[in-house]
Structures are given as C-alpha cells and as structure tokens.
Length: 448
Image 1 (tube, rainbow, N blue to C red):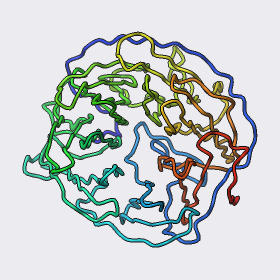
Image 2: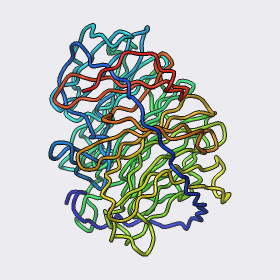
Image 3: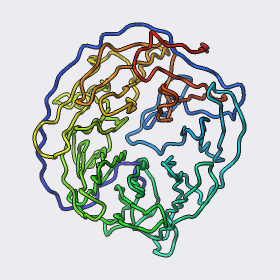
C-alpha cells in the first residue's frame, strides 16, 4: 500500500523527547515593492512554479496540497562565472548554461543512469547526482540507489551503487538533500521499505555518507530502528547540514516522531544521535495529515534555523486549513530547552490565504533570506524578510506583487539571491540583493 494512502506506521522502539517551544508572534510589517526578474531569451520549457515541495499546480494558479514533500527537480549552480540550470523535467535531465546577465549560452543532456531522479548537489570540487529504481521484489540483488560523481563541468567521473538496502521504492513520499565537508558527501533521503509482517511497505528516512575521493561508503542507515539512530517513520521531508564534523538533520514526521525533529550526529563514525522535537504535531500516530510544511533548514554559527508553515497545533487541529509562516531556531546542543518559534504571519481561520512552504537562503552565519508566497483570489505575492543568526527578524518584511517561487532552492550568485521559475515556459530568473537592501537594487527587470 502506498504512502499516499492512510497506512499504519512501522513498529519502532520509542524514546521520549522533551520539547521547549517559546512562541513569539512577530508583526509582519510590509512594504510594496518591485520585484526584479529577467526572462531568459532562450531555454527549455518546463513547469516548476509553485511545485515547491508539498504543493503543485492543479488549475491555473490554484494549489493542490500533499501531506509530504517531493524530490527537488530544479537546481542552479555557479561555475567559472556562469550560471547553470540542471533540471529533471520528468522526461529528461537537462543542463543549461547562462551568462551573468541571464543570457542563454547553450545546453546539454545528462544521462539518466537509473529511472528515478533523486537529487543534485554542487560541491566544492565535484558535482553529484543521485539516481534510483524500484525494487518491487524486495531483492537484495537489485540496485536501488546510484550516486554519480561529475566534474564541475558535468563530465562523469565515477559512481557508487547500493543494492537492496531494505528499499522497495527510493525517495518516495519525501525528498533528498546533500551536504559536504572535508571531502565527505552526506546524503539524507527516504524510501519505502521491504514489506513487513503486517503486509505493508512502510516509509522512513535513510542516510548514505561517502568519501568523495574514491566514493567508498563511510556510513549507511536504512533499516527499521528508532529515533536514537536518526530513524524516523514516516519522514515526509529531509534536510541535512554539516559543520565541524557535526551532522545535523531535520525531518518532518507523522508518527515516530510526530514532529519536526532535529538530530545531531557527532561524526559519520557515530551510529547514534542526540535529537529534539522542535515542533510537535497534534493528531494520532501515523495520521498522514499534519497541517505542516517544512521549507528550509540552515545553520548559523550558533543555531539550527528551520523555516516552515503550519495550521494551529492546538485543540482546533483539523478544523482549520489556514497555515501561518514560522521560523524555528534551535541551539546546536540538543535538549537544552531553548528552542524558539517565531511566527511571521497571523492569519485566522477562514482567511483563505494559500501559503507556500518558506524558503531559507544562507548569506553568511548571521544573515539569511526568508521567502514565501501568499495566494488569494488568484493573486500571488512574494514576501521577503532577513533573519539573523539567532533566528530573529532584521528589519521589515517586503512584499513583491506577482512574483513566484518554485522548487528551485535560491542560491547566492554575484551578490544576489537568485532562483528561477517556469510555467510551461522557458525560465524567468528572479534576483534580490543578498544584503536585503532592495531599494538600492540596480538591475533589469521585466514584469510578466
């Protein structure tokens, strides 16, 4: 039975967790402004608008919500001053090159090494793509995941294959994200697992850590266990960041744990984690509906920062589908009781505002750009605010009319935060000054 149906959660040993959450509702002072964008002169058509994680276009600009995230198909990276678009369109994996003024230079296609696209990561020395395929016979001899290493110019170097791995369908009902440090590649993703004695293929997260030089496996985790090893089931979204050898992950769970949960693994040699449920979720164990979407995770020099949106998690749970945007900050040392949740919006039940999961882009250790869109009556606005390393707002929230997000994670490029959007069209690149001084923006722009 697929995860998109109501399924029972996998049996797991439960450990209790303490959550300390301070609510600080912030007034969202807004100022109308001009958004900056540039439609590419050429480029392959696709549609990634509003398909940012949990949401997809169902009719015009209206959104269709899912309980879980999806893998990220749209990617940007910089190499030798050029901007590259790498996107899985559902049929092909394309690579396009653009100048610093977003002029089309050329394109190529990347071979799909296995049928399922998992994710892309632009590293310091190499780029990586993760592919997968179904294992419908639960066979330990079936290749389920392949990690491929490329040059920065996207020429294949080598690959690493994984077989069986308790995997029925890789990357299902969640996402895949990667990070690197000191020549180690860290992959945090999900899978539907082998059928258990209750007759179900349950879903959970899983990890692969590789030495980049020879693609050897340093650590892997894919069996059923409990949160003490970082295992969560179901895990509807996965994030990972590494700092000074410490591996931080964030998952969106509906059962074991039923929370947004942050884990700290002290090194890739450690099998066990410290963890904290940084945002608890109402409802019954294994109830797929959580009313939560998680959009971003970054590290400052002192905090884990998580951007998300949620319906009220109180005794009204289930009676309102109106989400509000929040920023969660959690200290590196788990369990200290200093987790803080700051609300960026405060819409009431019946407001009818569709809120996307908020994107979080790191500028430096003390500056982050938080973005989300709000749609009402087929009108979409982009909201942007700067966040410091403690998770507090820096200045006011800016509003940009008729501007959009996609599943493309914004990146910092030439001093600007850049992403792109398509809607059965070639890409339109959006860009905002990374320092948050949008009034001083000097750039070409074009309204749709």
